[in-house]
Image (cartoon, rainbow, N blue to C red; front, side, top):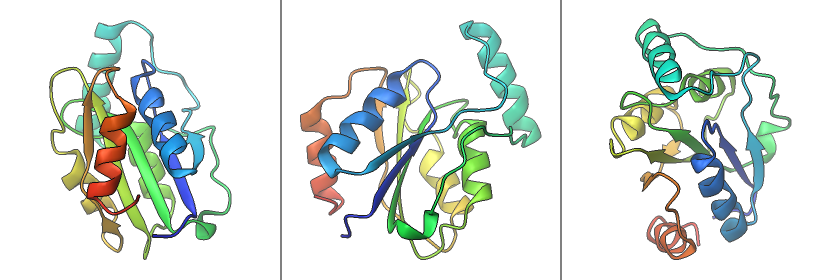
Length: 158
């Protein structure tokens, strides 16, 4: 496995960010936070309703984040909260906007009890010409180094 690793993630409540940072520490990869042009509301119920509408409509929010030099990376970790059993719209925007053909794509998610939902399937659908490795799904902010190490070994990244 190459050392040219990018860790792209969207985090609303910092749980996915925490997990992304653990993955970066364990892989030496480059962290890249996806920031939407228009921030999501902080209020939980409001963001849940907005996300539901966006996902149902297939909405792709504009991103402030511009990922430079995607061709330089062989492996792209993609992190998202589980929103309505799928990836958050900013992550969908990223996957639609960049050509990850021929790359290894490694999804990871955080959730509030919904598990991994359809996230791995959705990533495979949006990255048809990539090798998509098994997803890591972590409850809330409970990610531990040992959990990340074990997953990375299991999928052959470490």
